[in-house]
Amino acid sequence: MKMSELKELTTSELNERLETLTKNYEQDKINHAVSSLESPAKLRQMRRTIARIKTVLVMRQSENQ
Image (cartoon, rainbow, N blue to C red; front, side, top):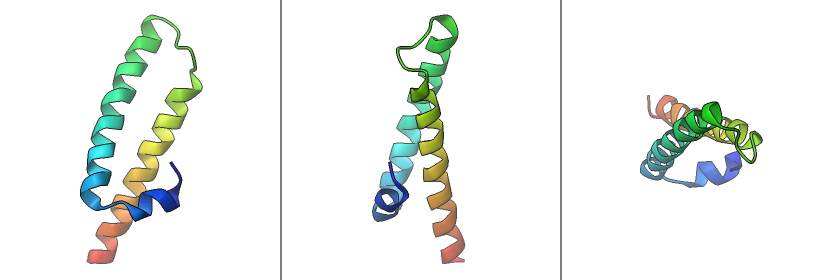
């Protein structure tokens, strides 16, 4: 997802997406260790999306303080 799309979401929606992405990332990482994935780049995309979501959440927290 793009940063502009993430900034439009509410904090609760971001937290939900972060939770689901983190779970999916962990499962895919384990599956990749056991057998190769169709697209290993998917792990990189998921990791970067997780980082983007965390960045938006931290930005919102700093704005509220």
